[in-house]
Length: 130
Image 1: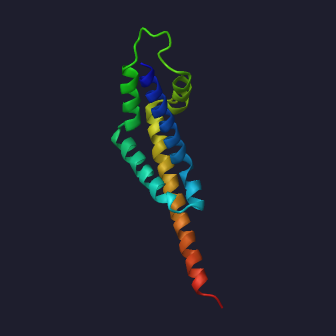
Image 2 (image 1 turned 90 degrees about the vertical axis):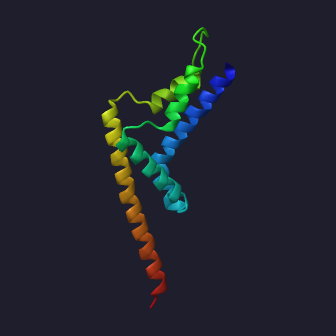
Image 3 (image 1 turned 30 degrees about the vertical axis):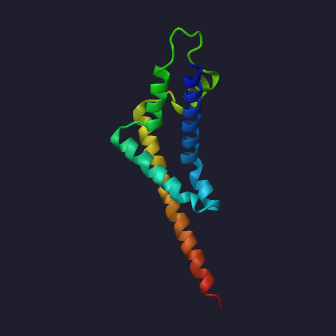
C-alpha cells in the first residue's frame, strides 16, 4: 500500500508542476525561446480539455491511485497529497475554473504574439544598420 501512496504523491506533485508551468511558462519563454513550443502545446492541450469539458489525464490517474488505497488504514492520504490537493483542486465552481483557464490561454496567446512580433522587429533591426 505504501507504493500507491508514493505513486499518488508523485503524480499530484507532477500535476502541480504542470499547472505552475502553464501559469508561468510564458515568463520562461522570454528567456528560453525553445521552451515556448512546449508551453504553447500545453496551452493548446489546456484549451482542448476545457472546451471539451474533460479533465486532465493526471486527475484520472490520481483518482485511480486513490482507489487503490485501503480504507482500513488510519491515514489514507499522505501529508503531501492532502495539502497539494487544496492547491490543485480549488474550491470554485467548475464553470469558473474552465472559463479562467480558457481566458488564461487567450492571454498567453496574446503574450506570444507580442513576443514573436518583438523577435521579428529585433531581427529586422539588426540587418538594417546605417
